[in-house]
Length: 192
Image (cartoon, rainbow, N blue to C red; front, side, top):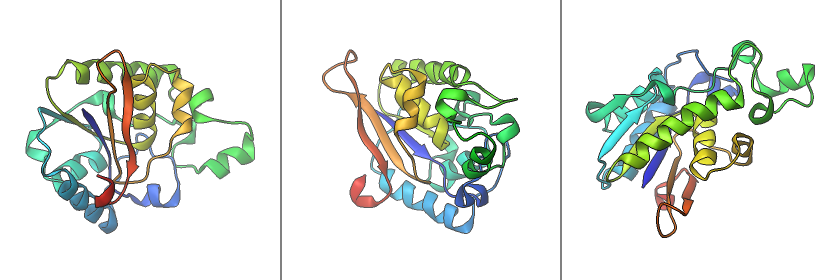
């Protein structure tokens, strides 16, 4: 299975600001979120662990107990929001009411196709691993990854949400020809 771990809370994730390339630390709550995530995952054996190079994901993997084995994967970085970096959806919609990230992308940043291309590379690497894989990244990228895991159009990522320090799992119904989402957006130990 492929486990998707969204990093713990940052100041911008708490305030709803789009955080793509701005490298923010975790809040105190975010650090505790990451430790809790580690508790939920401690019994799962992982063949490979990958993390976004941004400090929220790297620190989350470390606090969860996987930092020593986590490999940096630049493809796991969050969506480049370009001109929308640091802005809330409400601010963007005030200027562009019909804007949807997974359909339109961001001016000066990445398109949905750009992010899907990165997600496709991550999916291919994860599927090549024999055993469980753990990925630490950010919400919008992980939503795109789920869409691409299922073979869906990049725009399908808009149908899911992810909370900070949430856990999701991707797998198969019977075999690799039937990819599925096994768990989505679990934020408590009972959901793991």
